[in-house]
Length: 146
Image (tube, rainbow, N blue to C red; front, side, top):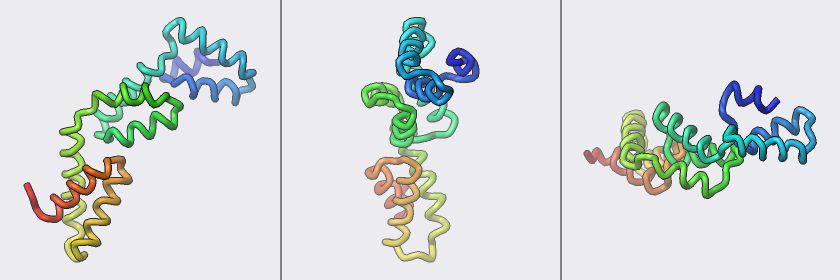
């Protein structure tokens, strides 16, 4: 069952454990199966996290905060998450946030400055950008800073 799942896509250890238990496997047996799969190199949370970050950051431009949240949901350990997201290009992340803020700011011309600022920060925060980047990019977008 676990091998069939791994044929379709990579899984974290926690995801595979949940899958096996949902399909009726005993928790201890699922643990032993996953220990063996790790020994064989078929399950590796660090490699899974690195591939996840690479594909989601490159393809969709997701920021480090959003990627960390997704990996936590997949049961990846915090230390592993930190190591995996260390490769994120923060300069590119900042530029992506600034572009989003500028695009959104152009639709908020009729709002007063403070209200537009709060909305832009909220938009960026929901997309997973850090509060620091969100505030900085929202201010720059509204003030027309280049």
